[in-house]
Image (cartoon, rainbow, N blue to C red; front, side, top):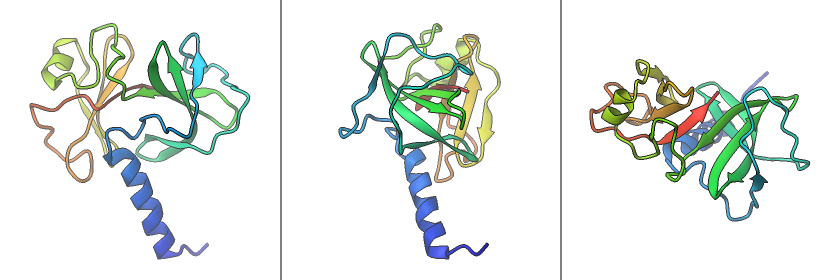
Length: 162
């Protein structure tokens, strides 16, 4: 299989652009979010009855079909597997707080004080850590998003489960 270098460049620029902008999960005005009564659980079936063209970067090496959703006025992204099982939930909406009180914009020191696991760098995606509630929080640094070291004044960019 031969890859056109120009096409590869544009794909990488698009994928990088999705992650580089902290509002990459901001609601697109052309899309009406799916209204949720409860946040779906990882591994549960999610079939909203509409097709999606959106792909969400759910790790440094994965793009998954995803839907915009809203729960109690808070925006989320719900990414699914090929068989419509939820594999990723995320938000950049500062209105959402984890049970520990962590939200987008919280400081690294607040996250660590909340009992977070050690930080992990995921190349090309960012730094993240798992909270006791099983929610993870993510930070970015530098052009590669996971360029060490993460500054002490880093702020949470998004919150997710996967």
